[in-house]
Length: 400
Image (cartoon, rainbow, N blue to C red):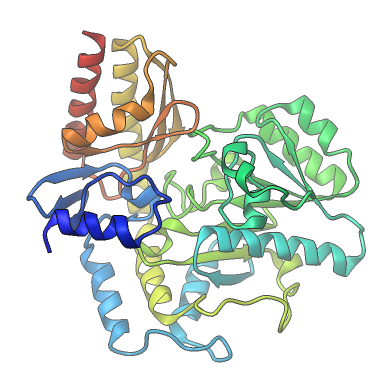
């Protein structure tokens, strides 16, 4: 079917809630995507941190094909080997004891909130509120949306559950005041605020948070939907920031493009959910679990994670060079292969999306006028150079 026909049918039959670019991709290979017109694009979005091993990764494809010949799904009233092996592999070398599988990041956020809520109900603390942070993003369902600290996502769906309170991210004084509330059951936060513009926590903020969590005996829920599965150079970013969550949830890159989500809990919370308390039809299905197992085995290797660190350092160094070259670049921040370039308000980052696409680069804006870099973890140095050359060319046109 030709592109014009596909775009016409999309306009007629698909809900128009994404603001799609008029590009129809047909296939991918590594860090490259190809449309039906023969154009190729460097993918520095990777499905918003989903295609962790790039497109058409041979090991991942083989694992998926093997599983399709066996069984795609079965009820969670029964047990399947891929989900058990994925759980074992995810937990190995961590402080977590149990896993709950679901289908997405927002589903994982909902499950994490329910686990924390039920724990406090079970032990009778009376705590029921959640402390979240401004500029955060935890998902699109009502509960996850209520935990999100950005009004632009929430305004159309009010009223939302009112047991979420918000404190400014990286504000130690505000954090201390908020944690004095004995009704706070848990703190929920991202290691790096991805949708918020790649905002990283300060050392002082993390140190204060850890002290206050222990002092007030609150649970810590860490959202690693975007930062987890090797994105920062560690399998989970919380280990790099010295955060010790009671509950961690992840999704996006966990199965390299196959929908999956996972919630990991420590021993204290491992038996909170009992039969009938929570569930999901497709969570932990053999196909998604087999894909997740293939991805996890690759990314958990030290050599792979070391490469993510070195490529992330290289990308950040090259971005810093552009920072010195162009006065409208305010800041470079992030870790590993989740990096942000904040621009001066005089240059609208979102207006650059199409300019990059026209030159064959997929690079989109997020948060406070920030370009967000999320290439596949398998990106090559020469591909980083190619992307930076395009950015330099676009920026040169702005500065001229």
